[in-house]
Length: 88
Image (cartoon, rainbow, N blue to C red; front, side):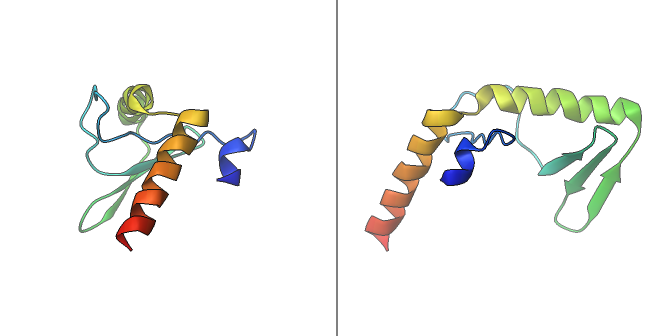
């Protein structure tokens, strides 16, 4: 939980109940606005074409709009941990 307060980190989680503007699809990570790594079931893809990077940037923006941050993300994590401990 301590990492959620770091000034250079923005941790967002999309709750199950959130209204999503886009399907989450395959996980992907941005690196310096020049590379996106996409993980699929069978391979890891490196995306470097500027027009494709823009598509991932737009997708990421839409995902950000569905996510919760700050105190809301900490509350979501606390609730999940409590449920996990009860089920344990």
